[in-house]
Amino acid sequence: MTRNVLIYRNELLPPTETFILLQACGLQSFKPAFAGLKRVRDGLDLAAHPVITLCGADSWYQKVKRRFFLRSGRSRQFIHAAAIQGPQLIHAHFAIDACAALPIAKVLRIPLVVTLHGYDVSWREESLTCWPTTRAYLRRKELLWEYAAAFICVSEHVLRRALILGYPPEKLWVHHIGIRVKTCNKQERHRRKKIVLFVGRLVEKKGCVHLIRAMARVRRTVPDVRLVIVGDGPLRKSLETEAASCSIDAVFVGHQSQFAVQQWMQRASVLAVPSAEARNGDSEGLPTVLCEAHAEGLPAVAFAIDGVTEAFPIERRKTLPVAGDIAALADEIIRLIENDPAWHEASDAGFQYVAEHFDLNVQTRLLEKKYEEVIGGHRA
Image 1 (tube, rainbow, N blue to C red):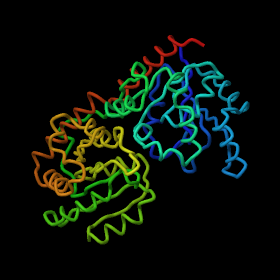
Image 2: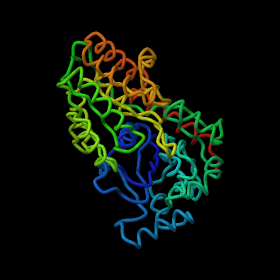
Image 3: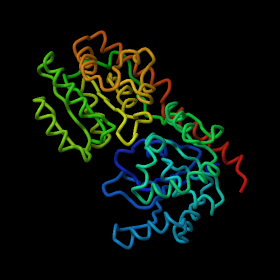
């Protein structure tokens, strides 16, 4: 029997969050509907699923309406629309969003499951006072810890951070969000052009500035190498200025579709993920882009920081440079570009690792078992 699950995100659905949509589409014994405060302009296509939002256009009145709901948890129309979908469970992504979904779950008397992705357990508390959504989290987090049936941690790193914050340990569960892993043999994976690829939002924690500076060193050894930066964000202009000052061949292509990102991965020789902890404490949970690259047979380099290393096979983790070591990052990029055996070894190891630990079908079946367990143990 197919059951219904309400997938909750305050903003539906940022184009960078394909992992949420992919997981929802992978469900077999549950039918997903989406709920949130508002739709995102140019967000992911949710036309195949029911979508419920508190607000429509982003007018002054709608902003007041959102703030009232975040403050009070009351909206008869919004909660009624959610009830019409007949969900047996709400699955909220990010703890911040879960605190907005909490009143819905309580009124409908259904269990709430929350995925913790990274920033929601790493930002310093003083950084969470700036927005209505985060202030709602600060007010309700203890209620969330008490009511939620399970907190899904995308990595062991996220679990450790959640424990430090006070999340109930008996409710924490480490579970990887799956990705599609194509059937691929070694003969199909081959060396690509001398392109170093970056994919991610242009924000501090993604560390693109470290990569740009490392590429200045890489070009001394590999003069014809190019850097392609896929993504957009508030730091784009400053990063373009940095690339010009370092005299590197960097192309900023902006946000791209998932299909276009896969095409770039098939052209590149190395993916670089130079993430580091931001000044406000924001850090990675487990970058999905690393798993996607490995699934394409594309070797990756990254700084050896908690969460990020969990996306690498164990044998590759010891070759990763320590956070902030630009010279070592450059050396590892050069090694993979110039050393054919090293490239193929990293390609094979990465593909095998994601096939064993991140396969979408396997991971989604495990998630559905958790859903069933939570529903079976819920007392209204």
